[in-house]
Image 1 (cartoon, rainbow, N blue to C red):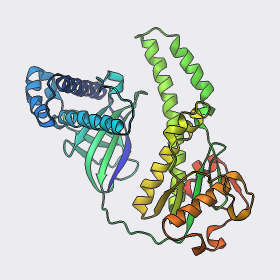
Image 2 (cartoon, rainbow, N blue to C red):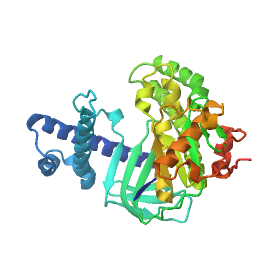
Image 3 (cartoon, one colour):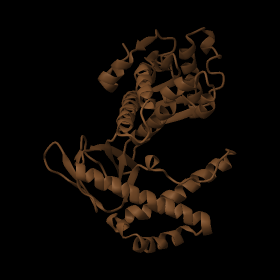
Image 4 (tube, helix red, strand yellow):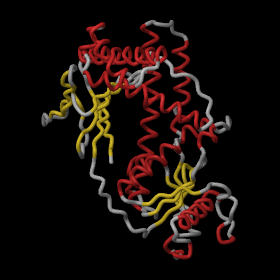
Length: 379
């Protein structure tokens, strides 16, 4: 099993220039490979064999670690595979496009070309071939064998290193003792079968006015001017702040459920289809239910917990045990019941004390999740 660790990099001014040049060289190689692919359709190995000739024609490419350039072949065919998957799912797709500079922001070091140097100080060093020792804030240790390092440049100007490590797959499956059903929504971010209803933090909505002001200032600047670049960074940093707030909330909420329950039942939602509702699209995108589900599945898999997806149709309309309950709470009970049946346990196997039906609902503010993480309790 692989796990990704994300750390902030603090390169010097000279190192930033080298990183930007490396990004540009990798982008040039990717676009050249795509052009060759469109002209005479060589296979993957033929493209890879052309890289030494390309480096002879452009000696500046020798400043980039060889495996970082070879990865661009993998990136190109991975993108082609993604388009073919979409086509099989009857989605309308176009041709693969050349990458502009603002859409090419990662350098990949696969298997080799990197090393973490511990300094015993606040900042350690990440040594990457042909670039040097980059100051890195290792806020937590890496567990497992490091397989890949991805250096990413954000539009806000910040640099990050995503370290992918291979970990032991021997996860002990936990017996099912505690169970919960989760219904996601807009009024409440989620309601569960234990009577907890979590506030929807709506980070985008809270920052929307500031974002509108920043966007308006950006639109008034002259194209390709230094002033425009300054305002572009302001907008990018605000977007990044909203994303970080949302991710922090979802990480801690998903951790709470995985730590406290052995079986988690959720709805199998078609989120892409739901976003087509233009009246709710912004609220659904801001909620990031898909990210929440991914985090639940990832954490549950590593902890040996069971998570099941059930058919969402009619979960709010079917009244549990003939009672008229809060709509979202009622849906969570129905989701739990369907989840138990799906794993072969069934509702009768658990007493009301175990599943907690018909409880008094408890509202949980979003700031309580963020400030205390998974340590709050249902009182």
